[in-house]
Amino acid sequence: METRILDGKEIGRRIREEVGREIEEKKLSPGLTVVLVGDDPASKVYVKSKTKACQELGIRGERVLLDESISTAQLLQVINRLNLDDQVDGILVQLPLPRHIDKKLVLEAVDPSKDVDGFHPVNVGRLCTGDFTLAPCTPMGIMEMLRMEKIAVKGAHAVIVGRSDIVGKPMAMLLLHSHATITICHSRTRDLAQVCRRADILVAAVGRTALVGRDFIKEGATVIDVGMNRIEDREEAMQLFGEDSERFKRFQDKGYALVGDVHPREPLGRAGALTPVPGGVGPLTIAHLVKNTLLAHEARHC
Ligand code: GUN
Image 1 (tube, rainbow, N blue to C red):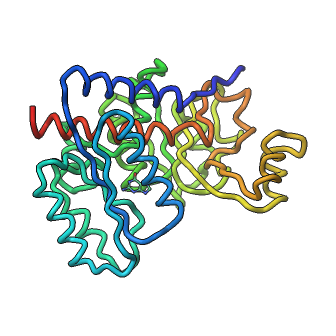
Image 2 (cartoon, rainbow, N blue to C red):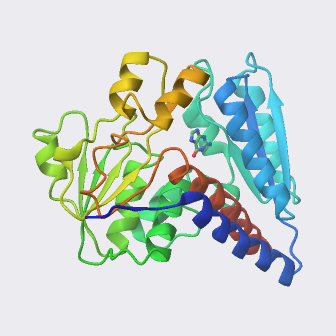
């Protein structure tokens, strides 16, 4: 079986294009503010690409960069100021936060109507009931991709590996609302490969390099890889990519590679469709963030 590679960059571009068109046609002026505490290099890259994606579509994308040493109380003051600022439609506090910050207090301080991450308990609750506007960007982006690629969800058995608040749990809720049958697996699940092999749609979101191998995948299944793991070990890279591959050559040039939770080669010829890493789910997350910013703006102003 030929495995269809789902091009997240292209799908993300289409989602952003739709958002851009709506902003232009309706002459809207949404604004997103991303709050970054400290200088974690990966977070800096993410935050930059988030604000850049906004600016390209005529959304005001601003960054508030705060020192690592900021206290929870000071951060709460910043968030309160953004809550009160009518120019700000979306507030995103980049995670992870430094350990001394009370993450729960911070996420609960964001005005639910500006919570473009969908992390506030009010929005989590609304997602559970199905009556929601703002839901987490990665699972929403994945649902949009399934819709655009005409992958049937209704009646399908979806297995999600990972139970995070950011991906696993909201993904399960969204698939459930679209009438899939849901199984959520995690590190304590017995016979993980066997459970995964029952999936028509398999979502891997645990942060374990190449955990999902060929024996996890039913013939023809759609495999969605949310993992983004950095590998630096030469032996590991050679095993994963194959010694003569382009990817192994690139690994040798750069000294590292990004690999998902799904093995990069084993699903090929067995899965019906597969999201690559990189270039699969990542661009969908950013695309949905700009969409959530538009939705927040419209809900607040229109
Ligand atoms: N860090 C990694 N993923 C995310 C995300 O989706 N939102 C936020 N705020 N931080 C993250």
